[in-house]
Length: 555
Image (cartoon, rainbow, N blue to C red):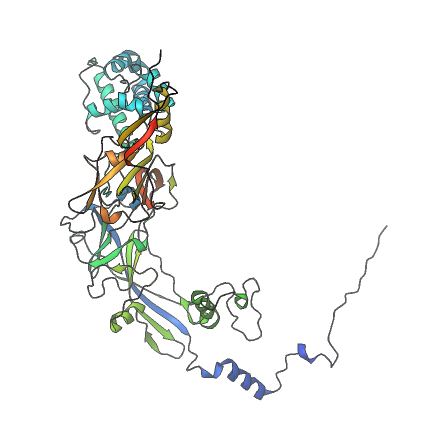
């Protein structure tokens, strides 16, 4: 059965003369002129709008890099296209643990194939057998490392020893033993070459710009621009992301002096007015978006930064226009000229904001503007640095943690190894290792105490003293040898005394993984330096007299 639905829509309309407040009367021209005068619209010098912009720029790719902050005379190395700069400057040789050695040996057997592994696997296990742990490794290993050593010692193939014998991956040399059959030698060489390439990719031995004496990785980048070669110097890079504020710029230098210079480019386009959320509306009777309310900003009288931001957003926001310019990553860009045509037919040349500083001989900090290490007449004027940094790199856990701190009571500085890479290759807490070692060598003590004199008290083995030496350095000394890669990587670790601030330094080692611009994967080990936790107290005392229970041997 059909039906019909009808309704009546109610629309409110204001007809009463008693509600003039909601009406927008424009019948009084004098009132409108007074309102314009009150809002400052009559103070404008002109109302011209830009209709065309001609922009010229010079974008040059970074072509060279070199380790060290200054003083180098070489041309450096060719920068790999698309490679993250952190993978070059932060890289340190990888530490190969017991687990990695066994894994590499199994990888070599898989590359041999079933037939060759059945004929030569036993011979490789005998010649390149994984050795037992040394006494020092046993003392600094956890229980997992001791169990691994007991299982694989003499049974697994030591991949590190095998790789050391093969030589270059392009032309590997087979070991003298096991002796291959003439028909199997080409296949064995192919497997050895594949294993050498796999090892070099998994455990890179590249050395970046890390300098243990300064706890930093100073480096330089070079690019050849139209005006001449430019050098970017990062003297205080201590790990982490590399960005524009890392560098100081200077003209010239030997890095990119011989590289071909880039060619300037130009574009003509229509500018677009800059917009942002909460921007004041251009029309008088248009209401702004209530999601952003600059009128409700809470700021103290001395909070000048927030007040200046609000003033800029409310007063000068509509004075800026945007001209898009795509700058490739890993390059230096400089705007050469900017010409604007207005709707009145005027042609204006817009100078660089930094040129005002050069004319007034003043130096002010600017966002995205690299500082000039040596005044050279405006080498960094208008220069935009787009370093080839790693985008959201993956970072592994801390495998080594060293705290370098002052001890005013003992008049010493200490390098405290809190975490190291154990023989297994996994992180090991030194405090736990020392506690387990004491438990293994624990002896029963008698209940009788004696009065014992000690020339000085002892500190944990992980606390390594740094003694001042000639030349303004702190040198690692003492009877206990360091176990971590940071302190044991040099014949005797030295640190510039100026690098040890009152807050101390904390140095950690991480594994990092990132993709290059071409999609390839980059893996590297690197250090990161952060502020410490202040001064520490070791409890070291001299001329100590205390009650002590003498040890009694176990029955």
